[in-house]
Length: 102
Image 1 (spheres, rainbow, N blue to C red):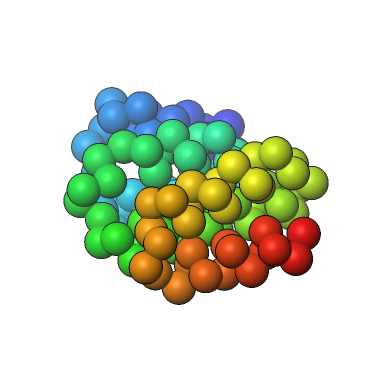
Image 2: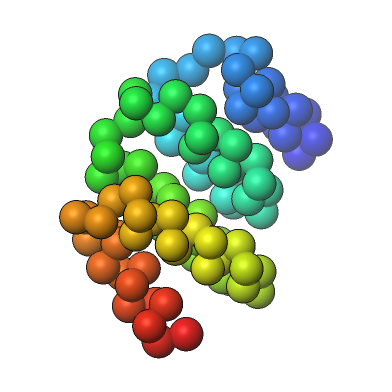
């Protein structure tokens, strides 16, 4: 697991170039490992290469990951970010619903 995390870290830090599809797989792996701050760092890199709907979904999933770990401030911050960045997408509607019912 440590070797895998080190490789993921190299990819996240930009030491190893990866395409958008591989970046999505890395994001999924960071989430699975519970490394949410690393997942967020990955999302913040080169967002222009990823379609908006996919970006919105990744940020929404990241918010849910924080919610599952009882990190209310991070959950709230990321849901607000989804609403601000992607107001026209379904993930923003879901984020509004979650915040309204929190």
